[in-house]
Image (cartoon, rainbow over all chains, first blue to last red; front, side, top):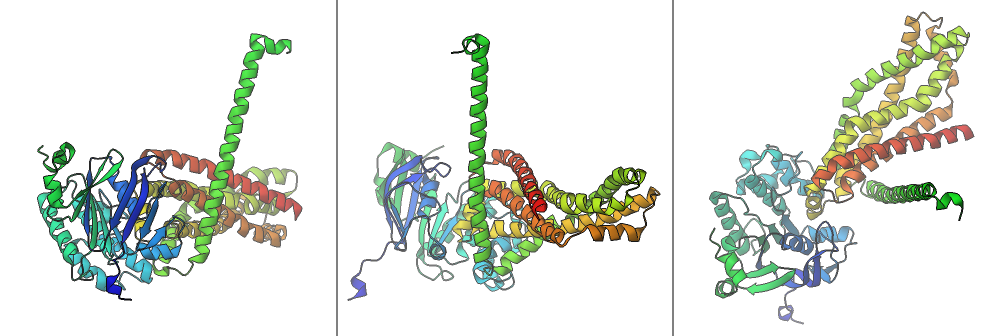
Length: 261
Length: 280
């Protein structure tokens, strides 16, 4: 059998999933989500605040239980009762959380970034420094390595969270509203870096990384994203490519994409 | 229907009794549910401690050392002070009384019963609870409220292994070691105070009385009791900080709830050991 004829396997597959509220999973924020994310794709999930974007990302990453439907990560069905085997699959996913990136505050920047490597390799900070230092340099964080993470501004904390998510060289990266509240310099840096990841960064397998970004404001992502999705009033709707989004005359889509403050 | 029930006063009494019964039943059910949840959390935490004993040792063992320093070494001054005070109080209250009735030969026995069997482990557990336990609930509750637990899960790191196991082992060992220290300091300071009181008690007699009063079971039960205190209090602390979704504004309430439940748990363990002492 020729393997080239086989259709590529979806890295994330949600079928009729009901996405619950993180604090009360029985309250559905989004219903009947059918979503297939293929390797190398860059999806942008947009919608108003409270529409369930964060819950969708965390559910797709296997971090939240869901009421109905099925979730498959790399072809493995996630039931919520997985053991260490699922944890191995989870290492193939990176998550950058909204806000200050949910860094571990007792730790410094370098310790935060090194923690996943140290945990899996059972090593000291020195043991993993050969991989951590180049990553910190790539992120422009080398001067902050010994700074306690609690002292960082939100924008720099987000960058540390990105470094921590990338240190295990994941195949899929979830970004939850990463540009919220950032100045133009940081936004520019993020857009360039994410674009490099989307094309295939030499430090991360040199092949296009699968990316899923949630955002309140999709405009900075319009030129980067491959597929766009709208979460609104408990519904999940595919908007299509950038051209489809720009051509969409629906009032809500126009309000989100053409917003003038 | 009796006359008492049909009168307004009788009816209001009935309503009062019913409401009291309902409230009591609710408290009992809530208490049983809490015990069940803490029991399940205990099994998970102990299971993780055993199955992941050799996992990520270079990450987890420094955390255990940090917890021992925090809940044990740094509490030595306060434990020393309380040991001194405890020795003064017990001997001050009892030796003078015993000497009046010519029973100073019971001083050692009294110290063993009061300090070794009862107060030593209890005071050590309560000091750790007050100085470190409350801070730990706030620390873990804040971490949970800020989503750091999900961040650990997202990295494939078991939060129980990373956050609970070091605290469980660290606090348990600390309470055990502080118990030993507080007993030694109390016994020595007790003798010092009796000496200051001019009680006719020479040091060799005092320590011989203590040695004679001590049984091998005291050492076994002392170890078991302090380990039980440490295990249960650290698990209750971690349960309230971590095991359930919590908002920042709920952290203070979780802390007070933790203190109350830890004190109840310590008293329950103490009662259990008193029964065992009586049976052995």
